[in-house]
Structure formats: C-alpha cells, structure tokens
Image 1 (cartoon, rainbow, N blue to C red):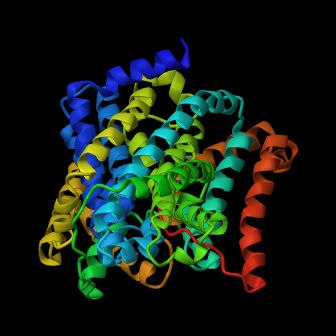
Image 2: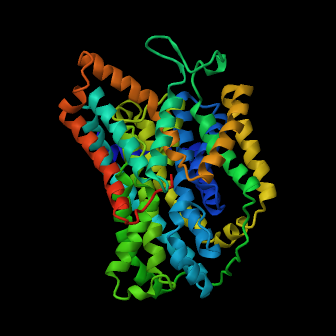
Image 3: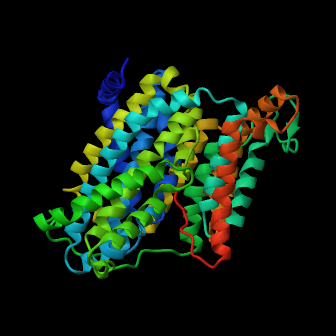
Length: 508
C-alpha cells in the first residue's frame, strides 16, 4: 500500500461519527485550556486521559485507543491555538509558547486591532497545522523503517538523547532540570523488578508493588499543582481585557502576514522534530528571524502583525513536528508528548517503529484526524473569538473545584485505589513547591515514562555484550546519539558560562 492509500484509510477512520465528535471535543477543550492562563497543554492532556478511558469504555481495544489518542492530540494542538487569545487580549500568555505573541499582539489590541491579531493567529495556526501534517505524512514511514533496524543499544542511547535534550533546554537552571530527570528515573524503579522479581523501594507497601502510576503523578504534579499554585500563590487575572471590534483582517494584513506564516510554519516544524526543543523555542526563533529579515525591524514590539503571524504559526507547526519522533521512534520530544506517550502505553500500544506495522488504523487515523481538527479549529476560532474572550473571565473559585473533581474522579476511575488519591495530593503539593522554586516538571514525567524502557534496553544490550558497557560506544548509531546528547547539554552550559542568555523551554 502506498502512503496515499494509508492516508485515505486514515481519513476513513477519522471521519467515523464518534471520532469526529472526539476530534471536535479535543480541539474545543484544547482551545479553552489554551485560553485559561496557567493550565497549559500538559495539564489539559494529563487531566483528560482518565476521562477518555471512561468515554471509550464501550469500544473495542483498538478503537478505544484510536478515539482517545485522537481526542488527546486535539487538546494538544488546540491549546496552541487558544494560548494566543490571552496573550493578545490580556498580555498574559495562556501557555508558555504564546509568550512571544504578547510582544506585538497586545500592542495591536491596544491600537484597536485585537480582532485582526486573533484572526491572523488563527489563520497562521491553520496553515502551520496543514504544513506540519504534510511533513508528518511523508516522514513518518521512512523514519519508522530506519528505526526498525535499531537494536537495544541504539534504543537506550536514543532515550538518553531524549532525556538530555529536554533537560538541556527545560527551566532556568540546567542543574535543576538534570536533578528532576534523575528523580523521574528513580521514581521509575519503584515496584517489583520484572527480571529478578525483587521488590525495589516499596517499603512493604503493597500498592507500590506495581510501581507508580504515571497518570497519578502527571495529573498530580500538573493539574493539582496548578490548583495549589492558584490557592497558595493567590494568582488571579487582574489584566484589562482589550475590546474586539473588526474580526476579519484587512488585505494589507493578509499580504504582510503571508510570508511570515510560511516561514514560521516550516521553521517551527523542523524545530518541533528536535527532542526537547518544543514550541516555545520555535516561536522565539521564528520571531527573531522575522525581526532580522524585516525592512522595518523598529516596528516589532509596537504592534507589527508579522510579530504575531510568525511565532503563532511556528508554535503550531512545532506541535505537529513533535508528533513525528513520538510516533516513529517512541521518543517524546516535549512534556505534552511524554504524557501522550503514557496514554499510548495505557492502551497497550507501544509508539515507535512498529506502530505503523502493528496499529496502522490508529497511527494513520490520528494523523488524518489532525487535518480534520485543524479545519474545525479555523471554523471555531474565527467566529467564536468573542466567546473565548469571555472564558478568560472565569473566576478561580469556579475553575479550581472543577479541576479537583476531574483529577480525583479521573485517577480513581483508573485504579480504584484510595492510595492513588493520597498520592495525587502529595504529587500536587510537590509539583507546586518544585515549580515555585524553578524545578521543571517535564523532565520528571519523561524520566518516569522512559525509565522502564531504558532499563530493559540497557539490560538486553548488556546481555548481548556479556556485561561490556563498550557496546554503547561500539555501535556507530548509538555512539552518534550519545555524542549529540552530550553536545546538547554542553553547548547551553558553555553559553551560560560565557554570560550569554540561553533560550529556555518550559513548555511541554
């Protein structure tokens, strides 16, 4: 079968009536998640995993997995759309990759051009979504075909690269990011060892024999942590919301935005491919490139529409690009894709080179659903701009109880364990104190998810080499991954030692 045949089959899966509803729900919830400052795609996806498990209970295993991943992927790229709304109207990024949009978006809003800024960000996001989707279609199968040839040593080194890449670019301090990575790997060792059957770090607590449930830790640290942040930090939204008059951009706006949207989309897609780079880095780079090549760089920061079009396209393209390493190599390149990977594993589907062979319906269904979702987002975002502006005004006193209810019921529905409810609260408090002290949470979740796979591949590699660790350096591909990982960590360190500012990624 050709790639085109697979895409057509994928569209058939995506267009099934229940999957269309799941795409719609995903992008709608994602937009709301993006609009509400502080929640972000990581918390949104983590919060919805247990709810999707309940919603798909009547479907077969493969169908349930497909529908759930379709909804969760919709939340991911939908949040990228929604994040621009608060950036433009309130000067408050809905999520971290929309930070750059505040620079010119809010200035445009103050000049009475909020509608044009929001419309251009929606159009740019749609174009970026389609460009990244085309890239995903053409790169997915060749990459997975290469990855099938990987042995345990190559896989182990690839996962080390993934962890180092996210640690190298997450948070304000690389040391803190590496500490969180190591902490995540340590948490992954809790439970009964699959090979020897020995208890590890269970302290005689039967609930720990199966290890820590990734979902409980993710929902606790992100969603419940956000609740503690709002209550203890007394964070509220005091910004003045800009008025929206004309929604459609002018011909001149479209002319000024066309090239920045194209550049931002291509740049964002390729940055999204890199492990650990993330959408925030893509939007920063896109903004810098636009300013460098502009004939009037002095306009930037004063309401230049290019300063909205390019970064908004880049952060959406990056979310599409980030799906490629997840689906083809089984390596999450950001916090949100790490949580998505956890969802795959929860449905007994292993993302990676065999995904397109073993689960073609799921893989191509999810890819095709991204086209349907992007179309829905464009139709949703243009006329509903004023409605989403109202969502921003939701008081914390209504939002906090809803997040707690979803978190508690969601986690309890998966394991039916009161121990998990205590753990989610503990993780929430830990998440609050860690993020308050600039300890990034994405490396912790990634370490927890990749830990067991890294351990299994390391053991298999050492069994092949009779305990000789040199196997990781003797295999050329493995050596290349380790060298890239080392470079990824050392370059930001060298730049910081020389007093340079390093662009950081706190997204997921």
